[in-house]
Amino acid sequence: MAFNWNDLLTALALLLILEGLMPFLSPSSLKQAYRELLKLPDKTLRTIGLVSVIAGILLLFLTE
Figure (cartoon, rainbow, N blue to C red):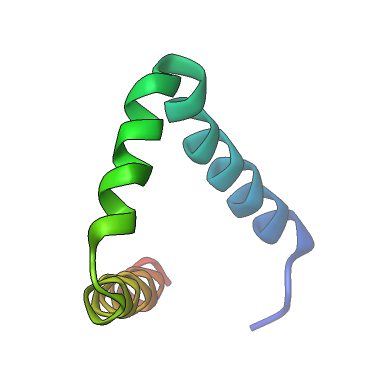
């Protein structure tokens, strides 16, 4: 499997688009979501992060 810069840049572009939608469409809702995140314990945030990483890895394997 050869490394393809185009695929990496496409993935980065999609990430930026998705990450930018919420602050563009509803900044007040984003601020409220951040306030709620601050209330969560570190362990919960780590668990959410781990589940996200595992889901991303599985998705990568499924799309290959």
